[in-house]
Image 1 (tube, rainbow, N blue to C red):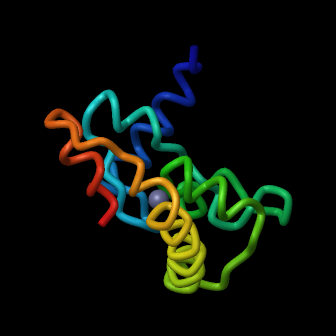
Image 2: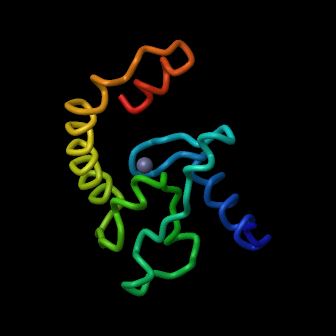
Length: 115
Ligand SMILES: [Zn+2]
């Protein structure tokens, strides 16, 4: 269970960012999608990044994982780099995973959610 302080902090950051990953735009506005939202230290803690709200952003788990402890001068620079990395992931998805997906009415949106 998250501590009340962490819940308040996460809620504050998510609300400010409208429950959207600042890097890719993923929206976590239902329980199922909210589960994949995280609070990212834009300037990583390992590099001296602070806990101030100005250094915290909403990030989906995938972007947070990919970004790791890389430092970027601006949010736009981070978004541009993440877009490059995500494009590489998409090539793997398109080549290997998408062709094996069975059409399923309940998943019609999820298959194309990231397009
Ligand atoms: Zn993201």
